Each structure stands twice: as structure tokens, then as C-alpha cells.
Image: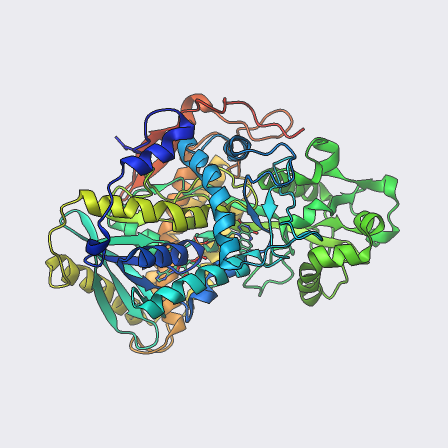
Length: 636
Ligand SMILES: Cc1cc2nc3c(=O)[nH]c(=O)nc-3n(C[C@H](O)[C@H](O)[C@H](O)COP(=O)(O)OP(=O)(O)OC[C@H]3O[C@@H](n4cnc5c(N)ncnc54)[C@H](O)[C@@H]3O)c2cc1C
């Protein structure tokens, strides 16, 4: 039975009570503890900097050449906080409510409430660091709206919010590196987690420049290694994002929760070529002012500006008059797919809908629209060659974020004692669908506030035997890592790692993407092991293991995606209800909305690894909704 360690008592007091009940480590004793943080994106950098500041000895690892390159830097639109600066009805409870409802009632209430509470502290923390949030003329912090809510609670820094927040976290991290409390290991990729005597006690890494495999021991390991959207090959994530860290931890015993909960973002630049390796997001913030439409007529050939108003279908405004273009992402994506499947999609592939700013420019003026969204329009023009100030943007849904991840309790500890998981890497607070601008909030809540409270409690309450890299578990884990790399290099077949990844991604997009059916999932589950088999017999890696070798790095990551994808499909097949981003075609309302089955699926699915060709074991964490009552989501 999974114990989520949810504190008893009224939800508003859970976190305060938990913080008070947790044990502290005396400042003089903190330097005796060694903490490994893997990842230096928002969650990892915030955790490493804060634990370093507290006085622990922290080792931080990243495969990037600088913490500043973490994928968090790509975040565009903003970060939510229930500050209610606009006095438009916001509150901690409303943010909590919106997030539970937005996640289609598949998240843990207590965690979400804590997130809403901490959101206030995050903005104060970042402002104190000098993060240049947008301000109104009078100097007050500005906010805007994101999908699935009716207040304006999203703080932003033009279209570069992630970059500015990461610079804040990076400065805090650098300060600790200079002070000697944090040691940064760049271009070091975690390839395994060491579990000694039942506790996470270290990691094994590969130096991406020299190929050297090294073991590192610690008292606690924190994984903050991001999400797995690249299982689809094409996604809005950075090319290097992968699932290796969490997957290898899973293989060591960490439960993987809700792997099928993935988010397809509605506003991305449509795929334009077979040879594309990356998709580009157009921030959700654009839906504050842009209007989504397609022609009413199928097979329309006229240019968008030649199509008269009465021949356009503003389908989101029509179907969801209360939320209009700002419905949550899962709803907007599904509707876009539907109109395209109906033959009304636009652009060369027919896989696109318009996002039109003509009304906003008319109402607000070109200059205001340029000030709000200028860099996004520039990105769009650079990629498509089109000027979105004069012609509507074309957008289509694309894989973007993963709500699933390693299972963690209220303390963000996995079921392996001493292994904590933060940011997008854990199964997070977002349930079956994440609301826009909530990932930055969660990553920073985890990194600045939760991990720095719960890790010390673990240290203070656990008797840790002295363990160093001479422990047998380190030698065994290091051997496994070396053997896997040697096995990859020895295949010497004919297909590149990328060609396998592309084929897997296409299969996942077709069968486990925006719409999932029993037949499609069974097809994927038959094909994935075949593809994996071919990979291990016909892979070609160029170059050797003791040098900078991106082909090897890629192959290693693809080998994990080929295992992980199977679990994702198993989870999707098991969950015969639709909820949030998980849309089972067999389970929909007469209006085509996601139809949940609360009686049978009101739980988080936490899967246990049993071996490559063994069926994983399902553990269920029941979800109780005491404060937000279960209801069919409606944005009409
Ligand atoms: C284009 C785009 C725009 C977005 N915009 C927004 C937005 O406006 N608002 C919002 O709330 N969210 C947004 N998101 C989501 C948000 O950016 C991410 O969820 C969040 O930044 C993830 O942060 P993280 O710290 O968990 O992981 P990451 O930033 O992905 O960092 C992962 C870190 O782990 C390291 N790492 C990973 N694996 C290993 C390994 N095996 N060994 C060593 N190191 C490893 C990496 O080097 C990196 O340092 C956006 C996402 C995308 C793709």
C-alpha cells in the first residue's frame, strides 16, 4: 500500500503543520551531509542553491555545458501565483480549485493546495532576486490570463519568463558554487541510481567529453531531470530532453506514476517537413488576444484574409462561450484535431488552425500587440516566413509536457528512501492535464520551498550508515552502466539511433497521442518490442565510447525511450476512462468531451518494474476529493 504521507487535518493547515512537525538539522551539522542534485533547470538549480545556502554539501549534475542551458530556459508565457493584485476574485483556494479541476480530478488535493499557497512566496523570492517581471506603467507587477481560469494571475517577462526565472536561480546557484557549498558537474550524465541497503546513496555518471564512467556517493539523491515528451520524437522540448534518469531510477525500484498523462499543447507551429526534428511552441499567452478559427467550408482554398467573417468558424468561442479561446490545453487541442479531421484544417498539410490577431490589433493598436508578444511574432516569422501582424498564424497541437513521472509522497520522496524527485520529473501536481503557467510554479515551489524542508527532515530522522563508493552496490551499478554502453557500441548494425527514435515517436503519436483506442494501443504494444529487438541488433553508432560521442549519447537515451514507451501504452490501455490529456475514444460524452470513470479510476497509477519482458505491477494510490467536489469538467 502506498503511503503518500499526507498530513492530517484541514487542508489549509497541512503544509504549515508538516513544516513544524518536520525535524531540523543543526546548522553546524549540515556540512556533514552530502546531497546530490541531478538537474540544474528551475527545479534543480533552485533546490541545489537553497540547500547549499542552508549549509549542506551539494553536488549538482547536468549534461549541459552550463546550468543556464537547461530546458527551463525555453518557457515563454508565464508563472501563476494567487497574489490577487488585480483584485479580480483570485485567492489561494481559487488557484487550488482551478488546478484540481484543470487536472480533471486526477491529482492529490493536499499537494495542489500547498502549491497554491507557495505560489505567493515564489513571486516574492524571484522579485527579490531581480527577475524582471513585466510591470504596468505605474510600476506594479503586471499579469495576464492563461487557459482554464477566469482571473489574471500569470506573471511574465515578455515571452521569456523561463529564461529570466532561470537566470535568477542560476545566480543563486553560482553564488553557492563560489561559496564552495555547491560543486557543479557539467556535461555529466546520470546513467544510474545506486541503491545500497534499500536507500538511494549515489549515482553513476558518464563524462560526456571523455566518456569516463564515475560513481558518486551521497546521503540523499534529488532528481530534477525534466519531462519525457521527446518519447514522441517531435515535441516542443529541447532535443536533448530524455527520460534516462527517471527510467533508470524506475528500473532500480522507483515507481513510475501515470506515464500516460501527457500534454499536447494546442498552439505550436505545424509540422512542415518529414525531416523536421523539433517543434516550436507559440505561447498560450497568445490566446489572450488571438482568436482561433477555421473556414466553415471543407477544402477551403482562399487566403485567410479573403474569407469573410460569416464564413469563419471560431469554434472555441462557439462551443465554450464562457472560456472561449482560453479553454484548457487538452480541450483546445482536441477541438483543433476534430476540425482538422473534419477536413477544415488549413495550411499545406491541412493540419492547422488559424490564430488571428486582426481584432486585437484593431482594438489595442499594433504597438501594444508588438510590446506584448513581439518576440513570439519574430520567432514565428523566422520559422514560417510569414508576418503574423498581417496574416493569421497557423498553429497545431504538439507534445509539450508530461504530467506523469516518478511517484512521490507529500515530501516529494519516491518509494526508494532517500530518492527525492522535483519539477517535471515527478508525477507532479497537475493530474491528467496541466494548466498553463503552472509548471514553472511547481518547479520553483519544489526547488525553493519543498525540497529544502523535506530533505533535512529525512536527514534528521534517518540513521544513515556510512556508505562510500567502495560499497558493493556502487561496483555492481557501475558495471551495469559500462556493460550497457559496450553492448550498444558492439551492435555495429545499419540504422542510426535517430531513425529508431523517429519511428517510435511516430507510433506513439499515432497510437498514444491525442486520441487513444484499445486497438491502437494494442498495435503499439505489439510493435514496440519488435522495434526494440531491431534496435539491439541493427543499431549503428559512429565513433567510440571514450570520447565526445553524440551518437552514443543519443542511442543510450533512445534505448530508454524504447522501454519506457511500452509502459506508457500499458498505462493508457489500463485506464479505460478519458481524463484531461488522456483521451480514450471509447470513453466520451455525447458532445465529444472526455468522460471520466470516477468509480473505477479515481487513483494515481504507480507502476513497478519487474524486468524487461515481465508485466509491470500496478499499485494504486486512491485519490480523495474532500474540498473540490468531483464533477464533469465544463468550460461552456
Ligand atoms: C517551449 C516551452 C515553453 C514553456 N513555457 C512555459 C510557461 O510559460 N510556463 C510554465 O509554467 N511552463 C512552461 N513550460 C514548461 C516548463 O518550462 C517545464 O516544465 C520546466 O521548465 C521544467 O523544469 P525542470 O527543472 O523540471 O526541468 P528542466 O528545465 O528540463 O531541467 C532538467 C535538468 O536536468 C538535467 N538532466 C536531465 N537528465 C539528466 C541526466 N540523465 N543526467 C544529468 N543531468 C540531467 C538537464 O541537464 C537539466 O539541467 C514550457 C515548456 C516548453 C517546452
